[in-house]
Amino acid sequence: MNLKVSLVSLALGALLGNTAASGQSAPPQGAAVSYTSVSQLNGLLADLEATSKATQADLAKLRIERWKADATSKKRSLADADSIQRNLQGALPEIVAQLRASPEDMPATFKLYRNLDTLDFVLSSVVESTGAFGSKDDLQALSNDLDSLDRDLKAFAGRIESLSVSKEQEIVRLRSDLKTAQAAIPAEPPKKIVVDDNEPAKKPAVKKKPVAKKPAAAAPAAPGQTPPAQPKPQ
Image 1 (cartoon, rainbow, N blue to C red):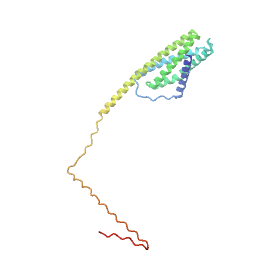
Image 2: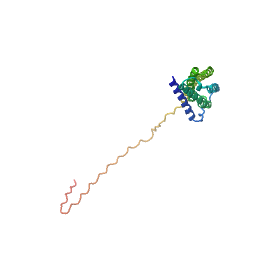
Image 3: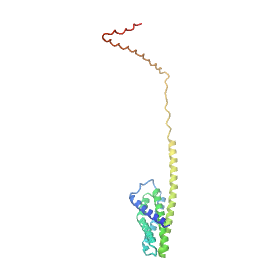
Image 4: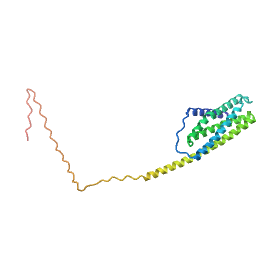
């Protein structure tokens, strides 16, 4: 359990770094988005930002260094709390800004969901450690934050599902429109070949007779030799 939590904490830090390195540019706007979809997203993001603000305040109040726990447990809890704080202050606001610029961007929506899922897991570990070593007030505050984060996570899971259905319906509609448009295009008529019966027949080509090759002249006889007899013409 401890090793798993530490690995998730490292993954959370890596996700923070990757998001920061991706730049501040927002994705290009796509097709027009319905008012209902934008309104729903704004409500979800407002709840999430309230959860983030409350969680940051409650984590800042923790005095993990004063817990009556072994050094390894304290070190792990401090690292987890620090990873959550850095994510809530850096990575999360960037993803939220990206979604506000492109409300129905599926990759950005899933990226936010994945980030919340990791936050939820690490915060669960901090809440568990607080219950074992911290005060009751700290435990109650962080438990409330975790419950809010759980609700936000489920809400965005539902949005991913609804967006997926909407996108699938849009693809089906576009395919149907394309087929309709293709069917409306008239087919190109076949080319007509006109045959003129009055056209005179072409004369066959006259073959040229091959030209006979002249016999090669006999080479002159060398001095002192009798030239060869020439054949008599028949």
